Length: 403
Image (cartoon, rainbow, N blue to C red):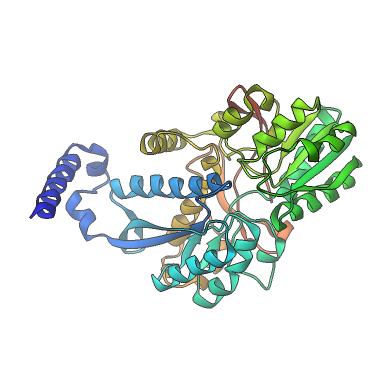
């Protein structure tokens, strides 16, 4: 009886909402029409707990915010049918074995499009499942082998470190007189591969690399011992390769307290709140790849997305400026070729020629890129925004684009 009452209550409540929502009516999306919509499940397999939780949390929250918004305005029309978007999530805890289990769960639920995983080894581990079960997945992981032939089911969801790193070093060389660079990385496959490509890019630009082998364990809390010898080398730039959001402020604080006065940067996206809480003004001047949406390039849709996200979760993760894109690309590509709903081969065919207006950034287009890096279009085109941290928030340093 109780649940029946609650159902009736929520039905009455949603009917009332439907009646007052001019948007929903304007879009022809009444409550009863929505009930008749088909369901389109989109998956997420990635990390939403532990030190790197911010990476996956921003994925999930972005997807949920956008799905709610689309459903509220009548759903998404793909071909002859209209769909409500249902986001199915799985926390892989940054463990490759769990990522495989998560991808198998998606396959069992008949899901063909999955956002994540958020790290290299997870993204590599799920490849056999994705390929055998007909799943296209959108990792936030950088190994080129995932996106170069014969691999064809993974699509990189963001700008890679080997694309942003060279752009950052070049900018700092030309504008901030950087000559000497030092690298430090966690002793894990992800950060180590990012460090190696960063070192190669720095050397190619003619910069002097004074440290390239220094590592730390990911659960380190006191970074003074590992940073002391590096600070003594007086580099102009200290690169925190593949640094997890929880470790960035600890490294920054330790370097500054040791008297390091040079620049500090990272090629991975960071969280402004975490930096502010963990390092405060010591983090001022920290350079990282930001979310793909600076105030200067935001559209009204992006402003509304941020507003809805903040209202739903009580805060906004800057990384979601990038993470907002994956679901949008999936939906828009399916609209361009409705046959792809159940057939990922159709999706792949569409990627080469796909283009749609970018709802989130002014004067920008949604298109697949990556031909230069991977020999095929297996990357989402999102603006490459490089930011500088100042007094609790990120400010734009420069904006670039990947081909």
